[in-house]
Amino acid sequence: MSNPLIRKLEHGALLTDEDRAVLEAISRVSRRVPTNHDIITEGTRPAAVNLIMGGFACRYKLLPDGQRQITAFLVPGDFCDLHVTLLGEMDHTIGTGWGCDIVEIPRATIDELLQNHPRIARALRWSTLVDEATLRTWLVSMGQRSASKQLAHLVCELLLRLQTVGLADADSFDFPLSQVDLGDTLGLSVVHVNRTLQELRGLNLISWKHKRVHIPDVERLKSFADFEPRYLHLDDCRDLPA
Amino acid sequence: MSNPLIRKLEHGALLTDEDRAVLEAISRVSRRVPTNHDIITEGTRPAAVNLIMGGFACRYKLLPDGQRQITAFLVPGDFCDLHVTLLGEMDHTIGTGWGCDIVEIPRATIDELLQNHPRIARALRWSTLVDEATLRTWLVSMGQRSASKQLAHLVCELLLRLQTVGLADADSFDFPLSQVDLGDTLGLSVVHVNRTLQELRGLNLISWKHKRVHIPDVERLKSFADFEPRYLHLDDCRDLPA
DNA sequence: CGTCGCTTTGACGGTGCTCAAAGGCTGTGG
DNA sequence: CCACAGCCTTTGAGCACCGTCAAAGCGACG
Image (cartoon, rainbow over all chains, first blue to last red; front, side):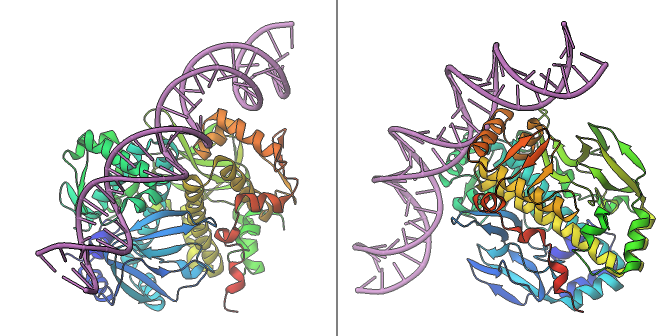
């Protein structure tokens, strides 16, 4: 099973074959969104739920002076706005810096899943909690870690998240971002991102060529970044009552 | 109605008198937690749901070297861990820096609310989305704003949140934190927090004496901080179908 | 009155920003 | 196949914001 949505949700609930078939059915690619295009814009209210099935997207917020802060990366298997119809207007924008495949799922389909498929409902709720925990972890990184550790931490997170959906191998993954994008993510200037990358390269912790990140020694990178994957809650369904 | 839980949830759904009675019944203060005490510790799994009804609490995370990052303030009407039983172990700690009143609500009671009281269920889900939006906003502040604007933004947020639960008047509120705590929140050193406070005081934007914050001109502070309250989604239930 | 915790101040150093320009890569059109 | 444009990366120099260290005020409370 190489469907990233299913691979991801397996970590949040003990799915049955029927659950998997339902998820497979709703996650057919419906449209390709080009590079540098907004999927959902701040201030609007989306009618459907968007699911990423290929490529990268990100949540971001623009400040009056034009500065941008990326607050999340969305990778295949991630929902853009699962519960957003509960809220009024979007308080941030979701965009594809880098071209991605999206499924638009009608609100009613989601409601039906939540009502009639308890294991899927559980997994979806689990995934929103993981999103929140990830956000907290980014905040900790930004507030307390040096630029190099913050960057290293992000790389560890992406490696693990992409591995769980089958899009990274043991020590590398495709990473289509520019250094400007990375700066907007980490709260750093491009110049400093560049120097930080050189530092990590000099320590032989990361190499990044041709839009692909390679990690010579994953354990060393994790310990450098104090990476503690608990916040991703990947083993949570082990704890379920049988 | 001065119950902070009810006042808050009124912003997330159109409650009936019966809903209010139910909420009133579950939010009786059951225990006082002293200053500097953890309510829920990282790595454990809480059995009940904790609701703050008085004072301040905060979520925080400790790094191996002892640094602390506060990721959220919890004020009266806020839940500590509404959905956390879905997850395995807590990935962060919730503590009271400052003494607060807490209600412990059995998991079963929450489940019953979610199942049988649709408007309350809606309001609870709304509140977790607002928590997430607040986290995103903190991340934006930390990544893109200067220390003084970040601090000003936080003060605007707290003023508004406390006003909605009846714990702030038009231009001031009680704020029991130390400057160390503020530093751990903003990702700044104590020394720099102190100088930043002096700067804001010098601009006549904020005064902070005897654990109470006073804001001479709220509109001026908001515009200084680029404060845009959309992320708190306080007007969302206006948009509900009748 | 003395202690303890919090706030404030000063001096100094470093991380990371700004400005500016050069170097590389890729795609496009001649 | 080359020229060129445009974007991204890389470098350098200088500076500002913010951190660290250390010590001195201040205030609440016993």
